[in-house]
Amino acid sequence: MIGRRLIARRRGALGIGLAAGAIFAFAGCTNDLPSVENSNLVNGKQLFVQKCGSCHVLARADSKGVSGPNLDDAFAAARLENWGDDGIRGVVYGQILFPNQNAPMPANLVTGKDAADVAAYVGAVAAKPGKDVGLLASAVAKADGGSSPGGKLFVSGDPATGALACGSCHLLKAAGTTGGSGPNLDTALKGQDAAMITSSILDPDALIAAGFAKGVMPSNYATALTKEQIAQIVAYLEKSINGQ
Image 1 (tube, rainbow, N blue to C red):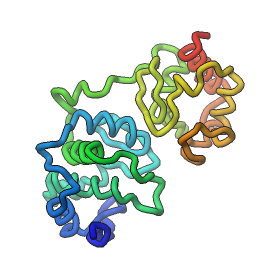
Image 2: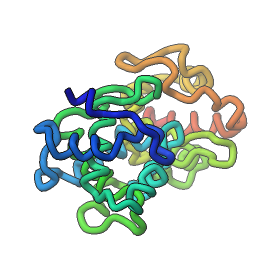
Image 3: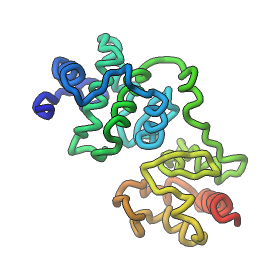
């Protein structure tokens, strides 16, 4: 029944827009979406950064993903039309449960109460100016690759060439990154040598970690980064993970 209510209609940059009446019916007339009073926004922000930030821009979360819609742009029109936090929350929750089958967003990225928390956080901050305050301001540790060139590339990528930051998808304790859409590098690369790490960057689909699918990691690093930059990232990972 929920699926029948989600009437497709484009709305701005989101391109997933649901008819306004269906949105509010979904948000207000189903027991699937907990009330906003029961939402944990801190948990929602943390999960958004870990699971969603590698694909979506959301200024308040300091996420810079580019493979999915910019959520601030996507909901700018909704703010002007006074949908309110709850209206946006309902749309986001619906998209988490029923992602567009023609888009790369996976199903069940977050589930249950976690999905409701992510939707509540995005609903509370998307297309709003300013910065998070209070507990939300400190909910996610700032990633820091240190002073080395490889660490900086790992955390920030190279926007000039379109090389995405590795840390937006991968957890690496030394860098303070918490991305969850790719393998945990502290365990996946433990004991691996420079040749293997280099190969995993240049040909990411050659060897897929258990539980992950092909085509998720960008395959343009060989052209978006120089050989020197790739070597710098590899050296940073070797030192951070294996102490070399």
